[in-house]
Amino acid sequence: MSLTIKNIPLKKGEYYEAEIAKDTIVIHHTAGGHRPDWTIAGWNGDRTANDEQLRVATAYIIGGISTYDNDVSWDGVICNCFPDQYWAHHLGLTTSNNAALNKKSIAIEICNYGPLKLSFDGKYYNYVNKPVPEEMVVKLETPFKGYQYYHRYTDKQLSALKDLLLDLGTRYNIDLKSGLPALLNEGKGAEAFLQHPDAIEGKPGLWTHTNVRKDKSDCSPQDNLIAMLKGL
Image (tube, rainbow, N blue to C red; front, side, top):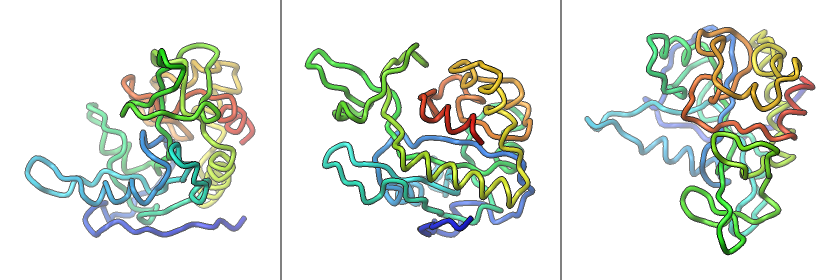
């Protein structure tokens, strides 16, 4: 399989140039706009309280559709911002194994705003109080993390994500049926996206940020994402 990947390198020092064996993939969404280059620019500019480079990033970001002008030029575009054998912080755990889990996992972001609120005016708003068109909204059967409405993952995003997962799984010998997909194929549905001890303890496979953090909503249990993961 040949992937088309757009390289938008992070500045040196924004990730750790240490080759670490990988046995896990973690899926995130950005809680932001449709353009990966905007997210990468943000990572290049973020700093610690001591004005040091923060080194928070994911190796890959998949672009989406603009919620304000319907720009589709980034939809499904896979961007790489540092070599996937290296690592950066992306989990933000308070547990003692935080660094170890970040090091051994490859992280992928999907450009997506996440949870939405239905307002009295009949429009859906993201967390920065900007409207999201109704055709880009998914209503979950059961609320997830307190929200019933979420910004929809696009078909091209999920197609690109599947191709990227299969490529990484092959190159790093990662079992894509283990972790979240196994829970889904056991019939757990949305429950599979909740925090899980196997993910926290570092069991290899495929997980999302919600599997290790109770306070996160990435990724949300949308039917199209679930169907793709079950079919890996």
